[in-house]
Image 1: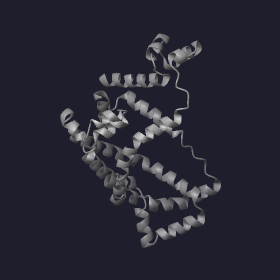
Image 2 (image 1 turned 45 degrees about the vertical axis):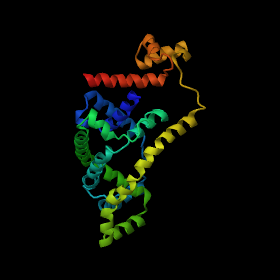
Image 3 (image 1 turned 180 degrees about the horizontal axis):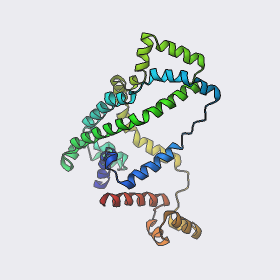
Image 4 (image 1 turned 120 degrees about the vertical axis):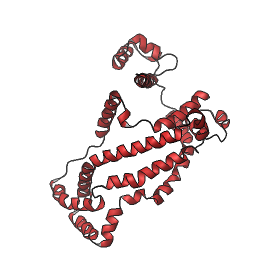
Length: 284
């Protein structure tokens, strides 16, 4: 029980882990590789000649709805207050919720009662509140600097999207509306309004509901995948599969067998090996 509870608390703490600047070179390279893979997920079709011709009009539209500096304004006006609010209330979150998500049986979760995260961290990490506040501050500052760099590309992509989704007539009418006092004000607020405190306050209602739903979601996932065959254990593998898997993982067949003992599947082994590597790199 203690192990599961500790893991649950750790998961919350690690969510607000060290900023990018504190990462090792290996971690940075891994992050770059992941981002490269994600980049391949979104491949846009080239614009047609007709759409290319609409880009000047679309850029005028983007200058109104997403002027330069919009990302920074979003970060400064919404992200920082959101982080402050999140960190301010995190201590009030019930540990039982995280323990249940972490897989603790309901009968053991019941034993946690109304214990909050703050009550635990006051003992194991008295500086938790200040640590998370400073971590959030660093995250916001670094993300703000990052979005400043990517904003030109985002604006260019937004212009292409307008050129694809709107006709010349529609873009002309939009731009004419944005030239009016009301239209100009609306355009300048159109992106920022989604992060308005009124909207974010309404979104806050979703967090408790989502936390309550997660155990049921996990159970539903298990139900829907229950008919699928279980991942293979070492004993299930053929000789050729063992050889091939050893090559893919870069381990000897003896190590492979050791890592896949009892009910450990191939996926379990890969996950545990990855966790071990993270632990080793963190201790260097």
